[in-house]
Image 1 (cartoon, rainbow, N blue to C red):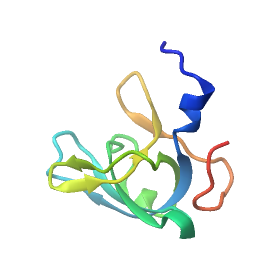
Image 2: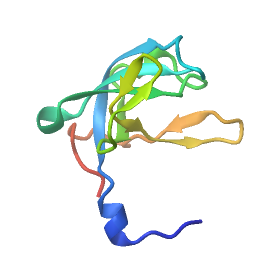
Image 3: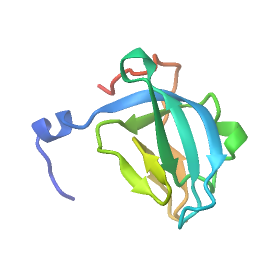
Length: 112
C-alpha cells in the first residue's frame, strides 16, 4: 500500500451529492451509467460515468446520495465528458458497492 501524507489527502475534494438522473451508457467499453449529480449551490450539477451496473438499476439511483471526488479534471469517456468520480468499494466479483452517507447530508458537504 502506498503511503500518502496528510497534505496529499487534503488535496482530494470528496463531496456528497444527490443523483438527479441515471441513464444507460451503451457506448461505454464496459457497462456503465451516465449520472447527473447535484452537489449544491457552490459546485452545482456535474455528470459522471459510473461502472455500477452490477448492483444498481437506473431507477433505483435517482434520489440516492453518493460521495464523489469533484476536483479531478474532466475526463473523456467515449462520447461523454465525466466531471467527477463516484466512489465505491470493489467486491471480489468486480461489482461496486457505492460509498454513501448513512444519513441525509447537505449536497456539497465535504468529507471530513
